[in-house]
Length: 219
Image (tube, rainbow, N blue to C red; front, side, top):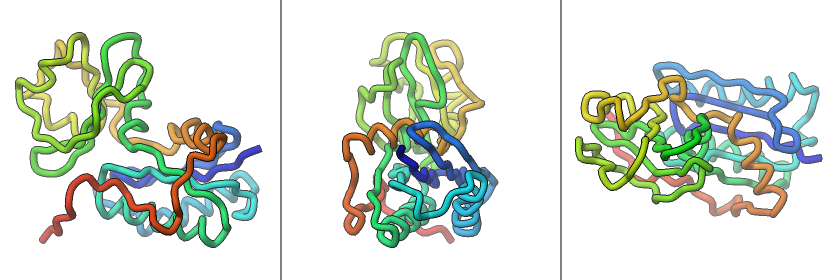
């Protein structure tokens, strides 16, 4: 039996899930206007363990959303995950944030483009096929009206970054899934379990989030 604590903090959604053999057995998450991860993350971790009547010593691994996303959110999530892994002497698993977001929906055809708001007019994007396989690398890019012209078929847009492009990328070729805004620890459960089974882990001491862009401090 594998018990994995999944942490997703790359966006405004602070999400903590406890999974057993790839199935979520406890979940706690909150998406507010501001980033409240520093206040909520450790409380949520304790809540899911308490709900499942388990202790930290029962955990076999910890998985964390690796980015791209909010610099501060990623830093908080990865720092917590690394600290717990070090203290408990258990492995750390890193999960692609854009894949988590893509897995919020299921499609029969076309492609999925998850879009995470990267401030200004940029979004973090990648392209996934109907089987959630990544077919184009992750980028931080400004979306124009001629964007994705090289992709045939229907394009499904998910994520908070997609909301900025309703006028630029009108409905038709593009389908907006407004109920799939933020990645969640729920989608991490199966992915982290599959990585755990093949020992696909990262170095606790040296792992860093995939920021993609340099940090720019706000005023």
